[in-house]
Image (cartoon, rainbow over all chains, first blue to last red; front, side):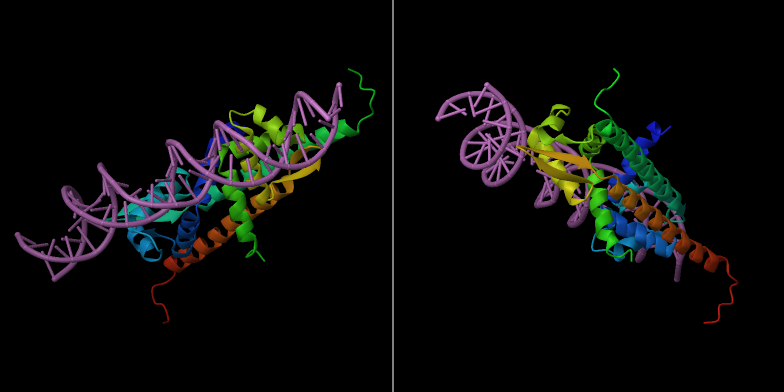
Length: 114
Length: 114
DNA sequence: GTCATGTGCAACCCTGGGGTTGCTCTAGTG
DNA sequence: CACTAGAGCAACCCCAGGGTTGCACATGAC
């Protein structure tokens, strides 16, 4: 069941790996909704750069945009973040069990009944 | 208390954003321990590339290496992943509460007592 | 001792993507 | 209507970092 989620997780991780994008999400969490132009004013980058980042974030599902008159307002989507967190947690669990198996085998009595 | 954790989270996210590194972690979870040379044989990249990735992963605390004779054996550290997952979950929660506040304000009666 | 295997370091190449500028187009405002 | 503020597009710059090759160094095997 986690197979299709892998790609989604990946895109979220890639999106979150960028400091500027993290900042953007932070700003959005603060303001609720904001346009690219507005967000750009709070950052040391151009509106265009912000737009690109928002595109990436949108691709990862971390953000949605809605048109309001002549501007586009974006807002954060915490659910996706939650899902990503769950994905990572699941991964961690999977690793742990795999490593546990290995450890068990290593500590098992030598005479293995092959 | 989550302030210093932010940097750690960032390094983990950056580390995990790389497909090859994800694969490396997967391999390590499978084998328990492995050297860079061994890991490189299972991937379409050079040992040097693997070494670089392992360095990054080590920097993020996702992996540890121990010297064993003339080779260095690495193994995954699921705990760090778990911590990262928690970090993301906390972030998500923070966003949600902030957005909830904003929404509440938006729906509040117009006559704000400024 | 010699040989083989594996690590460590350094220089280098090259693509991806973060960032910019410049322009056009659209939609509200006077 | 003319004017303005914001979105959208495209070309371009630049560098971080993923990947490579080549060689020197260390350690176990013979």
